[in-house]
Length: 289
Image (cartoon, rainbow, N blue to C red; front, side, top):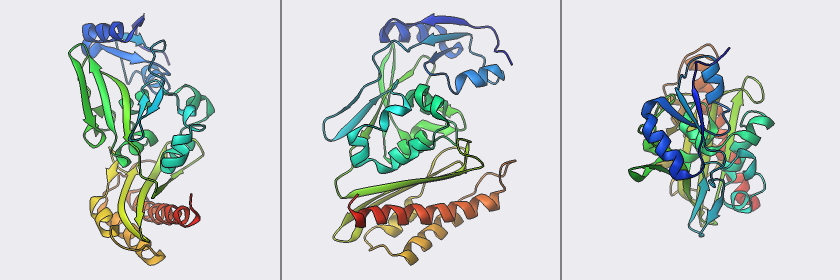
């Protein structure tokens, strides 16, 4: 397993990286952790003629003004575990990170690489869609902001244009009356997800003021469930209502059928994981977490 021939370039600044990517166009790819790109190159599923190493760029910060959490594209997955804002306001995000691959992948993989790769089973694209994040991309032509729901077009296909690179992801900071949960099922720990469900809930006087629900691993892109979110909104949540929401969501999906699981199995798994995720989020609200 060897990649096709390519040229290696080390970017010395963001401007330098963008100049190189603009010059190479579709034949150029940025590389940081390389946890997804390198295996695809070794299998020759990806054949970029030029790799632009961006590891030395200052894109690994997490900053917040209280309204938005901006995460630099080179932030490694392991950085979220000890971040107080993630722990306090993004429980589904934090739980999702625990499902990402293995320790080596979490130490080296970056958020920019994960969402640019757009694996349909990956956790961070689903987290971006769940939290209505904005993807900040740059090129020599300037900056663009793309809603996460519009960024992921298909399996391994995004809205990035040739010469563009993800530089940050911005997450609206949820209010203090919110909570969430993320649950995943895979054949083995660290394997690609058979299906994953993420939930965020905001409560007001014991009722759900806002709900968000996302599924990944069952389709070519993360799936939001606006009809189910509307069904939950404005109602107190109990076990029967959580079960009904899960049943409705599963019935509305058209899961992929592949060597890992049949569509019918995935549909049943989506229902069970959705019920568990909703109930887990509600339990956190009751316990004040």
